[in-house]
Image 1 (cartoon, rainbow, N blue to C red):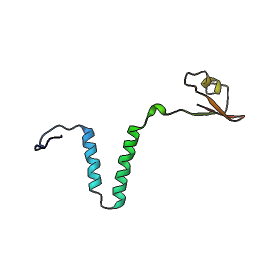
Image 2 (image 1 turned 90 degrees about the vertical axis):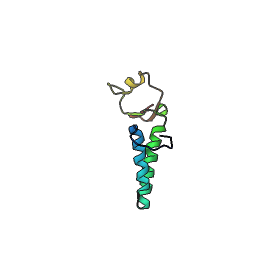
Image 3 (image 1 turned 120 degrees about the horizontal axis):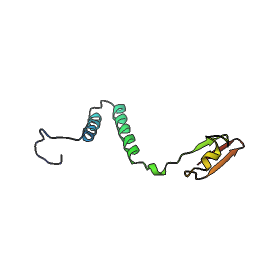
Image 4 (image 1 turned 60 degrees about the horizontal axis):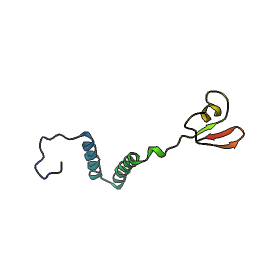
Length: 94
């Protein structure tokens, strides 16, 4: 709550409780390792929540052009953007 009144018997969302527990972990740390660990864990969670999932790209390495999981199947899909040939038997599907 953002008031300065006495805080007794009020409802709190579970996400706020999680954040409070993280803050308390930082203050209860006894050595530098515990302080850095809690800080890194909080930053990792924050980074994962803010990353842009639309910019992710699926890459498959194909060794065959025939069959259900071959190159012909993936090229005909709508998600096909391009390919890179590394070797006669190895192609990256983007």
